[in-house]
Length: 189
Image 1: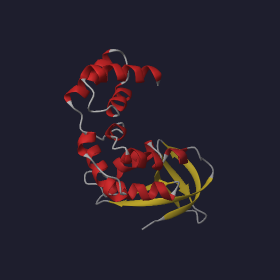
Image 2: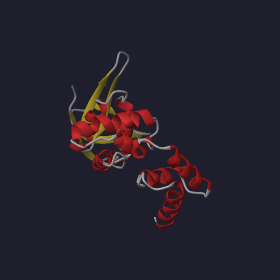
Image 3: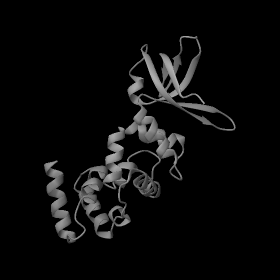
């Protein structure tokens, strides 16, 4: 297993880069966004080697926290190496942990390829590993919540913003109170 590489990022194509070591060997790796800014710089990266029948794929992480959280995401049923890498690429480890603690499915659904079921699974499985209490009632979207989201979108607000605001509303509010409160919060924030 290749666990860590030290070298210079010589070429970048999309989110893939060549890291050339002092020995002259270049490793082709998927790079997190923070590494993409380090072209022609010396780096020390943590790596995960995905072994497939047809390929060996290296994923490179700038910090050990990114690497550890990546491995936690891989342990979630239905989350593969590329999806886990996408989540790590989109967000910082502390943002992911906070989303798990807040049971924020919308946070995970903002990553391409992550749907409602996968987001729920990530929350459920990471909650148990991170010691957070998971409550499926908090992540399920009610009929009223869907109505509020649609109403806010009709008013011109972005879907992701509306889902985030609605997910934070008290479940005890009436439909009208949810709409009023959501509009107020959207206009303030």
